[in-house]
Image (cartoon, rainbow, N blue to C red; front, side):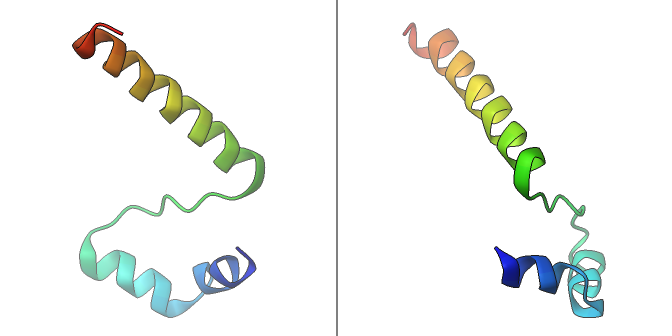
Length: 53
């Protein structure tokens, strides 16, 4: 994770985001943990809804 955090601050990273039309969604630590928890809940809800589980 340390390498990705260092890369995130580089001109090349910003250029890749710009050139590909990507949003900067890089997260670490607690923010990343919250994102994973929210996504897990969202996917589980969809599975229950569409698969009846």
